[in-house]
Image 1 (cartoon, rainbow, N blue to C red):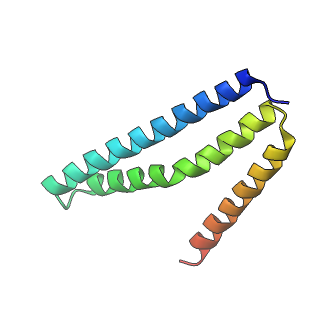
Image 2 (image 1 turned 180 degrees about the horizontal axis):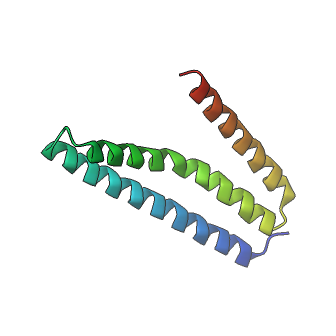
Length: 101
């Protein structure tokens, strides 16, 4: 059903996504933290810290979205459905968390 080339592409894309998200998050958090230590009243620092945390928290969700796309490309429908169930659960949890603030 899935070829070794498809799996290799999937792993390569997944590795790129995870590496990029973690690097962006770490850089944003580091710059925001340095800015906060220099000037705690700076709103840019707070925004950078929030953006870094948001990026870090969004990384697993992006991984699930990428998995759905890649499994659909490979026509592995069992994993497409399974991953869509996980994505649905993540979405419901996110919406409930926002509405119960």
